Length: 278
Image (cartoon, rainbow, N blue to C red; front, side):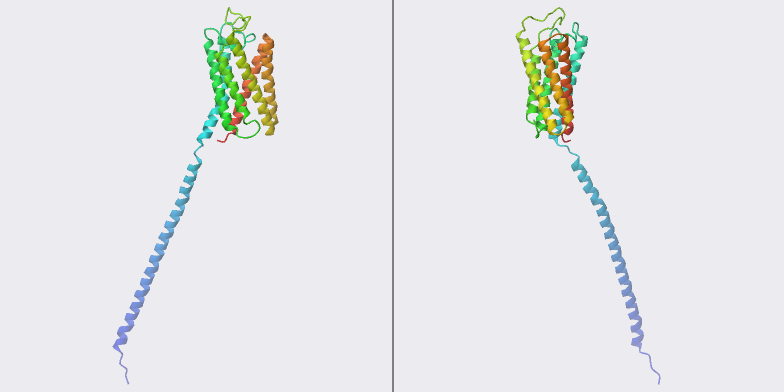
């Protein structure tokens, strides 16, 4: 007996295959789309990740750049201590070598305040004193603890004030300077005040050196302590020498003491400047 093929079977089988193929293609397409989307998402994420650290680094770098204005002011004030001594010595020597009648072996630099050009030395003393005063303010801001941190700025400020007053009250003429003059037998009022104010200033500076020597010893810096003590001895010794024997030996000893003192001031200013946070 022959079997007749069922038409419904013929029509259903190809349709199912077609449907299955379509479903497979759609699934593959979806998978491809998903993979593409995932790749895009991964690429975007990688791009974001690579960009993010750069922004963070830039922000960190910009935060490291600013400098504390207060520190900048303190270091500027300390800088006046560095230049005060060289300024005073250079201006004084320039006059001593060019003004008629002045003899470095017989005349103290303060006598340069006499004569028609005496105003130069007056200005030299006053300006140097103001620079020392600014240096004292810088020390007050920089030295916040440790041995002598209060007294060093105070003593340096007294020295600065002494220089200003020594400029206002002129020294009496020396032996033969200005040309044709002679030292008075009795010191004038200005001359006495000059010696008094300058003397107080020098004693204050010597005391500051001794306090700083103690501070260096406290910091376990023996070389600084020894040099500071030696500078104090040189300064006081020179002042005593010219006061007791105002001849060639006294003048040279006093001049040497002044140069040593100014060298110490500049060195101490540099040391404090370097130790102040940038």
